[in-house]
Amino acid sequence: MNDLQFGGGFIGIVIAAILIVILLIIFLRFVPVGLWVTAYFSGVKVGIGTLIGMRLRRVNPHRIIRPLIKATKAGLSLSTNQLEAHYLAGGNVDRVIDALIASQRAEIDLEFEKAAAIDLAGRDVFEAVQVSVNPKVIETPKVSAVAQNGIELIVKAKVTVRANIERLVGGAGEDTIIARVGEGIVTTVGSSEKHEEVLENPDSMSQTVLKKGLDSGTAFEILSIDIADVDVGRNIGAQLQTDQSEADKNIAQAKAEERRSMAIAQEQEMRAEVVQAESKVPLAMAEALRQGNLGVMDYYKLQNVESDTEMRKSISGQADQSENE
Image (cartoon, rainbow, N blue to C red; front, side, top):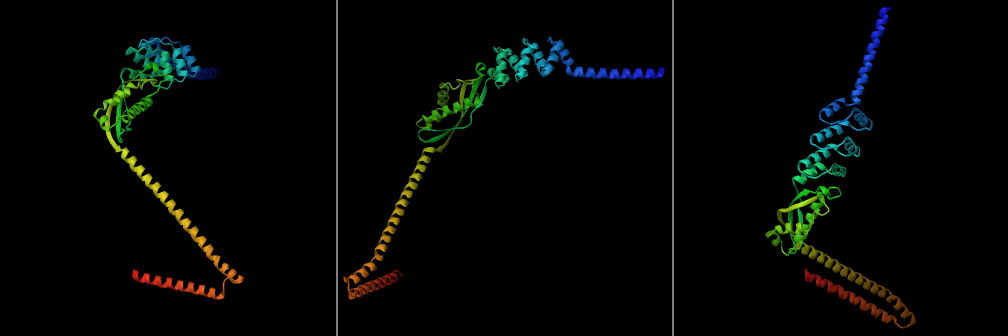
């Protein structure tokens, strides 16, 4: 009996131990104790209840606490509520913290709310801070422009820009800068009387484009525009004249063909009228015979004249054919 009691107690202890282990595993999985320890020794004061609350709000504590540790070590004063709110809004907390640290090192005035707004606007706030410190070069595609003398120039430019933090939210991007620079190049080349003027002084394009204030309303500030390459393309003026001449020739041919068709139609119409008139001659002759206005002998004479005429035509046609051979 004692052995059975001892065996039953041992089994109970094992089951209880297994349950405790399972509960401990679930607890450690639900509550990131390791993350709490790391935060505590990093100087970030966050409670276990806060971490459990993040789990209940379906927020990954690692996405909040690790950036907060990084910010605290950099001397930034932020709270878990700020980071959690940005995370729930769909923002990238880690990139925002990196941007704040970079702006602090570069002595750029950037608040967390501004950085979060830039991030939520879909822009890479960390890259924007980098570009504001270290300007980037935007290379435009080849721009085709035609001078007044009809010669095409193919221009390629490099635009040095610096990010404007204040205009990142709502400001236009790189595509707008490229489009405006291309438009300025086309305008400058198009206003030149000869393409040689542009080739002699390509800086005129840069100066003209810079004076237009192309960076207004964009997220960048244009520092310089450098013409990287200028190539001479086709003679557009001559090609247009050739195309116009070809078009005029086609129009003239079409009009001539129209007149020819009208003449043929008119000729056929006249022949039809002749045939129609000739078809009425026998009727008129029959009517004349019936009324006595034309005698039988007169009719025979007329037939003889027609036969003689046909014979003469036949002889004349054979003679002409012999001469041609």
